[in-house]
Length: 277
Ligand SMILES: [Zn+2]
Image 1 (cartoon, rainbow, N blue to C red):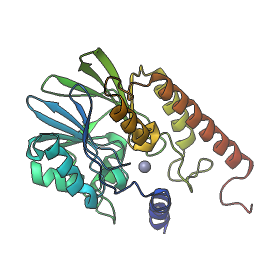
Image 2 (image 1 turned 90 degrees about the vertical axis):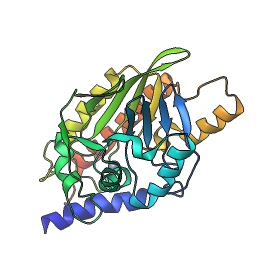
Image 3 (image 1 turned 90 degrees about the horizontal axis):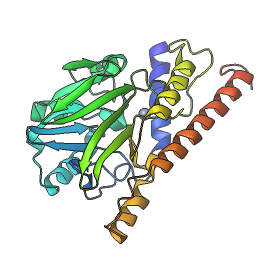
Image 4 (image 1 turned 30 degrees about the vertical axis):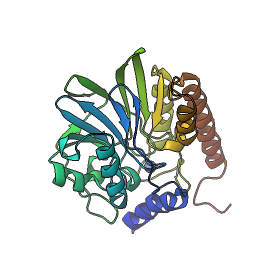
C-alpha cells in the first residue's frame, strides 16, 4: 500500500506540472564551447561533445527520444557516439528513456547513489536501466578532456544531482551549473515523511550547496528554471551576446526557490500533512 502511495505522490505532481512545452520539439543549439542543448522546449538534455565521444545529461521521456535524436543529428553529432549518460534526478521526465539510450548506444549510465534504486526499478514509468557506475557527492566524470562534477542536491529526490563543468569558450572559461531541481512538488511531504524522514534537512543542504557554486552559465533540468525560451529569442536577436551567461539570474532563482521551500515547510509545520485542515 505504501509503495502505491509513493508512486502516486511521485507521478501525480509530474502530470500536473506538464505544460505545452514538455514534448514540444525545438531545434538543438550551442550554449557555449562544447556544451549543447538537445532537449524539448522544456525538458533539458545537454550534450557535451568531446574528441572521445559525447556525454548526455538526461534522456527525457521515451516519447521525446526521436526529438532528442533529431537535435543531436542536426547539431552535427552522432547519437551512436554517446559514451556516457547522466541524469539530473530519477523522475520520468528526465530519465525514462535512459534504458533505451543505453541499449541503443552502449553508453555507460552513471547515477548518484541515492537515486540508483529508482533508476533500476521496473515499476511503471521507471526506466529499469542498469547503472554502470554509482556516483557519490563530489565525484568527477571525465571524457575527452571535459570534466563534470556531480554535486548531491537532495530533497526533490534523494539522489538529485546538480552538475557543474568548466566550459572553454572564445570569451574564456565559464562555470556552468545545471541545477538538478530545488522544487517542492505538489503533494511532497516535508514534515513527518515516513519514507524520507530527512527530506526537509536535505532541501536545506541543497540550498547551501547551490549558493556556494560559482555560476556563469545558468542551466537546469527544465528550461523553465532559467527562462530558456526567452533567452533563445534574445540569442537570435543579438548573436553577439550569450544570454545563458546569467550569474544574477542564477542567484535570484536560488533565493526565490529557497523562499518558496521555506514558506511551504512553515505551512506544513503549522498544519502537518495528513491532519484535518
Ligand atoms: Zn522531478
